[in-house]
Amino acid sequence: MNKIVGELKKVGVFYIATEEGAQPRVRPFGSVTEFEGAAYICCGNFKEVYKQIVANPKVELCGMYDATSWLRVAATLKEDARIEVQEAILADPTGPKGLYTAGDGRLAVFKLTDVKAVKYGFFAPPEEIK
Image (tube, rainbow, N blue to C red; front, side, top):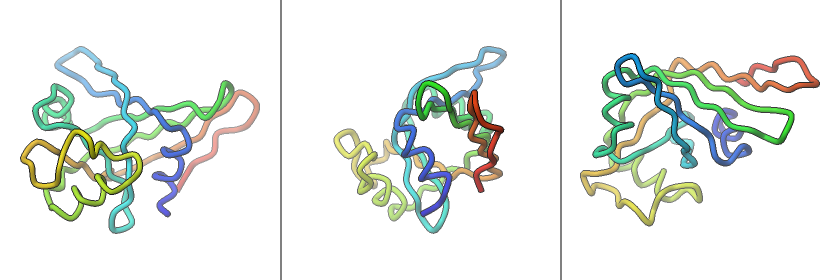
């Protein structure tokens, strides 16, 4: 399994930071899957987060493993409109299958590229995840 996907699944809920002009925006996400060896996340293409990602595809994700350690992921998102990747994320246990269907024209799926992931903790040195 892609190590970034594995770590994001371990934290469960992770937060994605985008920007809207000069204003940062943060919201919870939970859907992540591996497709063709890469990490993918998704959202609705009618949401503000989608517009923010299209305007600036550089994002950061952050989630807590427990009370003393957390994961930070910096990445550039690249939209992938293939039905196959939509089906893969919807088939994943974390996928939003109750909200979307593949090819419905509402689901946007993004590949994480230029990824830098680091696990941090109060009692351990930072560990880069590759």
